[in-house]
Amino acid sequence: MTIRVVLADDEGLIRTALATLLPLEGDITVVAEASDGHQALAAFAEHQPDVLVLDLEMPGLDGLDVAGAVLAEHPDQPVLMLTRHARPGMLRSALRLGVRGFLGKQSAPDAIAEAIAHVAAGGRHVAPTVSAQALIDDCPLTEREKDVLRVASDGYSASDISRILHLAPGTVRNYLSSAIGKTHTTTRHDAARHAREQGWI
Image (cartoon, rainbow, N blue to C red; front, top):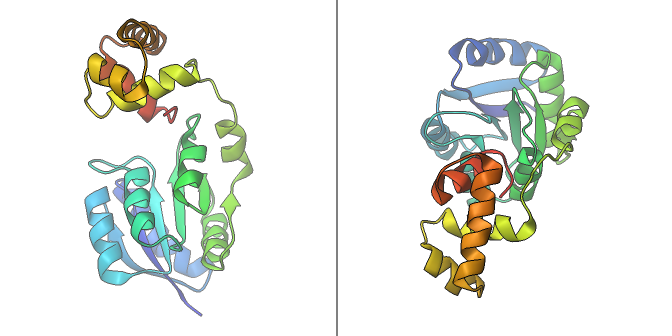
């Protein structure tokens, strides 16, 4: 049975090469290509592919954003994520969303085709190099600092964070100050954004 794939990658050369090479490596048809996250969502809605292949880093909506949106509505959808750098926490974030496959963009086309077939059949595929990178967790934040930044990332003030997390205002300010220092940023919003980009929250 032919595996129908939607392929999303903002790097045109890589996307075009994969679209050409994947059908040569297995019974795969690339039914649509997308160059950003919004196009990926539109292509998924139009084609309902067997496997959605997403670049992790794309403009607008990144691969995790797209995967989260798709899997919230279609939890059984096979999604394969490609990345140049498995940042600490990113693999765990992807797996929590329900992403079934995760491998490096430097992987050979036959390895990517094999991963596509594996996730299409209901399995999981995480490349050893990716899992080794992702398991090196260099997050400097404590669990409480992560909690505070999660709430801060939604735009809440320090007093709102205090109320939501049932913490004293001074305690919240201390956690925020510590998190800002550890992330080498200048505001709580920058610290929250940095922590989210690193996959820490």
